[in-house]
Each structure stands twice: as C-alpha cells, then as structure tokens.
Length: 432
Ligand SMILES: Cc1ncc(COP(=O)(O)O)c(C=O)c1O
Image (cartoon, rainbow, N blue to C red):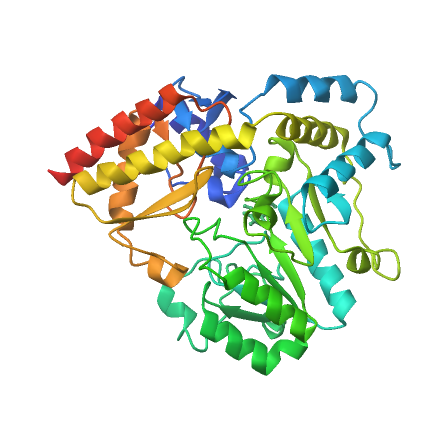
C-alpha cells in the first residue's frame, strides 16, 4: 500500500517522532502507514497524490466535510480579532448556550480542548461531588489517554479474565499500579454483571462512565434497556452517570445519544464533531453537579477557550441547528450500511452490522455482537484484507476494525455508489 513518498516520509518522521506519528493510533505498521497531503470535503490525498473517499473522518470529528468553507470562514474572521486572552468572550458564551439548548441532559458546561481533557475533568467533578474514588467502566470503551480510565480498552480477550469477575487491564505501561484500586471493569451490555457489581459496590462508586455505543469497538450498540438500567441504578446508589459522547455527540443526533435514546445522564462529554475537527471539547450536565466547580474543585486550562476551536464550534452548531445535516448523513449512511450488508449476504459471508448510519462497523463471521469479548471472535484477518484492498482502490476505512466508518455531510450519493461498487468487487474476489 501507498507510494514511495509515503514510505520516505515515514522513515524521515521515525527519526524524530516516536513511531513517526504524533498519536499511536495513526501508526499502521512500517511501510503501511499513510501520510497525508491534504483533505477536502469527503476526500483525502496522501503524500503520493493518491485520492481516497475518506471514511475515517479523522476518527469522527469531521461531520460536515474536510475544510468546510463556512466553518473555516468563521474561524478566519474570528482569529483576526485575537485568539487567546485568558478572559472570557461573548462567542464562547454563545457556544455554550447552543450546547445547552441542543443537549437534553445539559444545564451547565465547561469547554475543553480534547476528549481526554473533558472525560478527565468530568471524572474529577464526579469524584468531588460524591466524595468517592471508584470508577466503573466497560471493556472496549475508550475515554482518552489519562490514567483514570485507560483500562481494558483493548487486550486479548483472555487477559480480561472471567466475565463474572473481570480483570482490569491497563492499556499502557506507565500507569501507576495503585490506580487499579480505583477501577472496576465489566463487559459492555452485561446486565447481570452490572446488577451484581452495583449491588455489592454501588455505594462506593463515584461514577459509571460509558460510551452510549462502543465507538471504539465496532460501534457495538447498547442492548435495549442497558443505558436505562445504568441510569436507574446510578441514581439509586448516588453515583454520577457520565455519558461519553465524544464520538456520538453532534453526530448521531443534534442532541447526541441523550436525544437518540431519551436518556438523561448526570454528566456528558463532547469533543470531535463539536468543532468539525478544530480543537474544542466540552463537558457538562446537571447544574447541581457542575456548580461545585469553583467550590473547592479545580478545573481549568490555558487553551480551553481557544478562538479557532470556539469559532469552529459556533459555526458547526449553527449549521447543525439550521439545516437537516444529520438527516442527510443518516440517509446516505443507511444506504451504505444496507448496501454493504447485502454484498456480504450475496456472498454468503455472515456479518454483524453495528452502530448508526453516521458511524457504523461490520464484524465479519458473526451474526450478532454485544461486547468486545465477542467481537474478538470476528474474522479480523478477512476484514483487514478487505480494508487493504479497498484502500488500494481509493476507499479508506480505518486499518483497525475497531474503528467505525464515519460519514460526513459531503459524502455524496456518488461516493456511496462508488464505495459499494468497490466492496462488491473485492468481497466477490475474496470469496473466490
Ligand atoms: C469516546 C471517546 N472518549 C474520549 C476520547 C478522547 O478524545 P481525544 O482524542 O480528543 O483526547 C475519544 C477519542 O477517540 C473517544 O472516542
């Protein structure tokens, strides 16, 4: 895969940047890691000039399209008036007002710059509010790079131990062993396990944090009633329910999974689609909980209201409110999901399609999938083989099958048709 300039740039980068990338997830391997030249709309060009229909969308942030004119124009207009003041501007108040208006569960918000920052802050607020330390998270969910929840995001299923008493597995060296004391992990969608843990430890748990679907493991959907169960039990035990909408927020509905599932968590985290790719994030929730910030709870950051991010969020949210953007994405995404399913079925390859039209995945060889342990049984080799073939033909999902396909407003019907043609061809080829 990829041409000589890509390989040369990887070598050069690896001399000065660990792995040759500035985030480990961007490293696909030596000689097979893409390096980008530019992106526009739904397309991306690598440094060799090859063009792709991009379904990675930077891991989700690009909801409108790469380099979307109305967003970029607002950013340019605003940055000419200064980008950072260590003071609050009217524009950021307006952005927060829009977040509150669009999010069913949010009354107050603090801005941040990344998803990692927003989940880290939400966890501190939850711990401060409850006076407790333990966090319950689900295997296969990813909440950012901080030590608090970088546990059981991805590991061989065997290392997770028995599903009745899972072993939290740190996803990196360098996480203090003592942090283990503060984390409980469970398989996603494990109703019985969740009931058991809440019964035994509910009164010691500060927060239950979950992605609404497993946005970092094939977009596995919650079973009917699972999010509602979390809502109910956390309320009964006085724990904070944090819904991590970093991937689903401003993507699966204007009001995110809160609107989609009609669920009211205590705190919500956003990033990604909030600013169509610019560095802006947010966390917020009930006034009663958020109000403790400032009352002995420290939350801050030099760049939390950086003007490019805030201006981009302003333009993105305004567009989402004014136009049927997510509906358009939903219609096209649905056609892509259905079309891919048909292609696998026509070739007698079982496949479980999970997620939503705006972010979905397929797990080959499975009829259904409800958690990461099950997902590891899917035919990941075949998926990888298909992905590499698709990339050679100009269609780019992520190399890692855990990462969903993401759509943006600028993916056209013609892009969907082309993608389906490519998959019809390559699936038929592998079937032979
Ligand atoms: C659900 C979720 N939470 C948090 C994060 C961390 O966000 P960031 O990469 O902006 O720090 C991610 C990143 O992919 C995510 O998917």
